[in-house]
Length: 83
Image 1 (cartoon, rainbow, N blue to C red):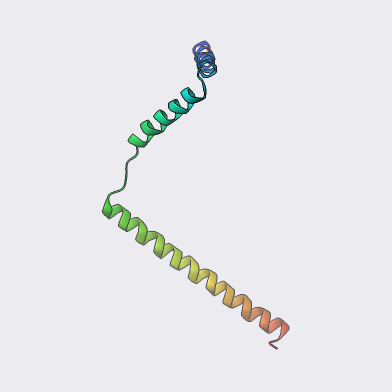
Image 2: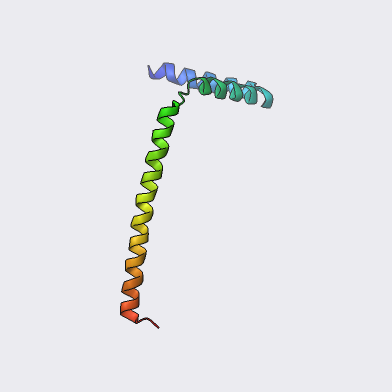
């Protein structure tokens, strides 16, 4: 099995050397198009629920950070005195 992998990688390396710049670019574009055909896009309902979940999560994190900021502001004002 390892011999087959080595032969394949050698063949691929040799093929890369034989292709020119435009051949490699065209191969890349073809591979990108093939991969894009495999993509499964979310439905409208999934997209809506994911968006709502992200917005709720962000609101919770913002409230948490705001609470920490308020606590640290009060603590610093108490330690150093408010001028």
